[in-house]
Length: 257
Image (tube, rainbow, N blue to C red; front, side, top):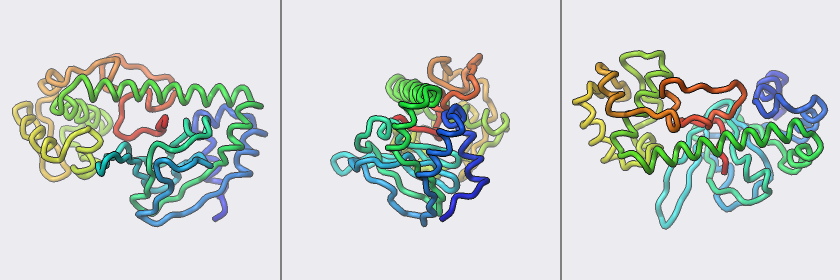
C-alpha cells in the first residue's frame, strides 16, 4: 500500500531519523514500503535473516523468544515503535519472533540502504549509535530488575510506573492481560496472582484490569525504586531524543536485538 505523507511525517519524528539529512531520509523512504497485516501474522521468526528495519505505525506487534519448547513474551510494541535495529546494523539474524496481535500497519526500511546511509551520513550514523546505546542501557536496567528483585518487588515497581504514566491516579488500568503481564515481568501467571495477593497488605486491590493503589507511599517503601533501574525513581532525568529503553519499561519503543 502507498505510504501516506502523514505517515512519512510521523516516521520523521523518530529521534534517529530526525538526525538524518533530507537527502538521507528521502533515500531511506524511496526503498521503504508499507504493509497492512491481519492479526496473528508472523513478520519474522527468530533465526531468520533480517532484510528490513520494522516500524509499527498502527496496531500492536508482539516480540517473543523460544527455547526447549518454552516461549516468553519479550515486549509488546505499539506506534511509533521500531525493532531489530541491532540485527539490521550488524546484518545478522533475528533473535526474536515478531507477530501482529491485531491488524497492524508496518513500515519496512531496507536494511542495506540503512547501513549504506549510516556510512555516508555521519550525523545519521551517530544518531543510530545513540539509539542503540540507549537500548543497551535499557536492557541493563531490565536485567538488573529481573536478577536483583523478587517477583513482588518487580510487580510493585511496575505498578508505580503505571501509576505515574496514568497521571498518579489512585486506580490504574492494566494495559495487558495478566498472562502477558506475567511473561513481561518474568513470572508465571500463578506467581503473578500470588504477588498481587501479597500486595493487598500494601494497599493494592485488583478488580479485573483495574488496580487500585490506596497506600502509594507504603507500596514505594516495598518497591525501593532505584535511579539506576527505574523510570519512576525520584530525580530521574531523561534527555529529549534518547531511546526510551534508556528507562525500564514494559513497552519499549526499540529493542536492541
